[in-house]
Image (tube, rainbow, N blue to C red; front, side, top):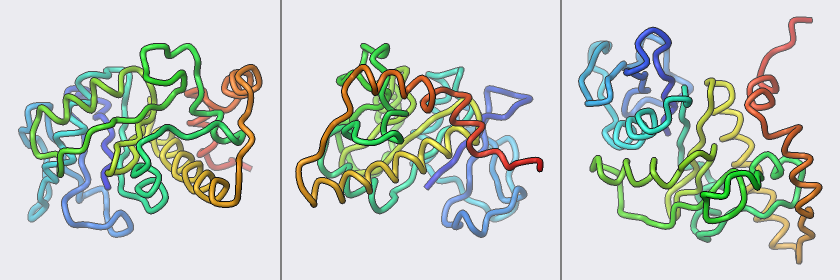
Amino acid sequence: GHITPRDPVDPHTFWLNPFGLAFSLIKASDLIRVDHSGNVVERAKNRLINVAAFMIHSAIHMARPNVNCAAHAHSIHGRAFCALGKPIDIISQDACAFYNPINSDTDCCQDHLVYNEFNGVVLAAEEGKNIAKALGSVKAALLRNHGLLTVGKTIEEAVFWFVSLERCCQAQLMADAAGTTIKINDADAAFTYKQVGSHAAGFLVTRKSDS
């Protein structure tokens, strides 16, 4: 997977985790800073760029100046749910974070969408641009036959939306296997979204208590 924070000093560059190194093993010194054209600005010795990560994330960082971090991985439940080629149902409070009827430019009236194409490993700039264009103004996408993608104004927000969406996928897979689910109505979902789906909610829920 890849998590790519925008550089706070030079916003035309962002940081990539290196190819072939697990998240649990990565140190700050392992990260690679690149610009939107793929030029390496900073890199530790013997650290390789993940080309697919660059193609997807550079397009998102260019298309969404308000996004300061993007997260993508082939998580188990997200990957399984993405094979269904459909958005998540709003069946829980957590799922309400991805509901937002204001975003009328999406295929569904929710703060996530399905990217209904799969063209293999993203090694071409054009496919990265297609994903970024499809993402539009929402915070999450289910890439069909691929995995989950989330964005945020902060690292904390992007990562929290990813973890939350993964758990929503897991919950729905389990609920659908058990029987017919009861969906939350639009009015209640929209009300709950204001409490759990904002940028502040995504950021604050990950912060450690000072007490």
